Image: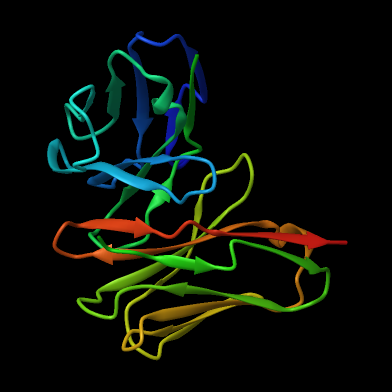
Length: 113
Length: 112
């Protein structure tokens, strides 16, 4: 297994556009997490899935953000009507059990102009 | 609001020196504490998952201790090498919400 992968690695978009990121977790992991990281801060939890069910979503996440994991494998994170404040690194991680170590992807760096 | 604090925020250490830094977290409802290393342009990598008060874990030249009663963990690096340059993150596991809360990280730079 090659670990967690994320695509694209970099995305530059204009304000108001929609963007979608993809995460492919480690195949046998049933838990998948999305985080957002801004300069000088640690990763901030956005949402998580157990198999295909989205079980927790941060209250910080506005209605412009949506995530899916349709078959319990890969996941997508969509941001609609992007704003400059959405510029950040978006990280995906997967794990096998609840409090076990999480395996992170390399992240997608979003820049909103 | 649950706070996880790391100090210092950044650290410059001479190659060969040993160093340590701190993670502070709530002492109530403890379940697990994670340490990750995040090198520039790479993925964050798990170092330790600690669950027991008084636990000490070691991986090569890196070790960590845990005090859940007072709410802190120390990460130690012995004989720092240039490849140790990275941001070190600790994260507190919230069992009820099933999620990690990260500190802001300690950015370590090893000077050759």
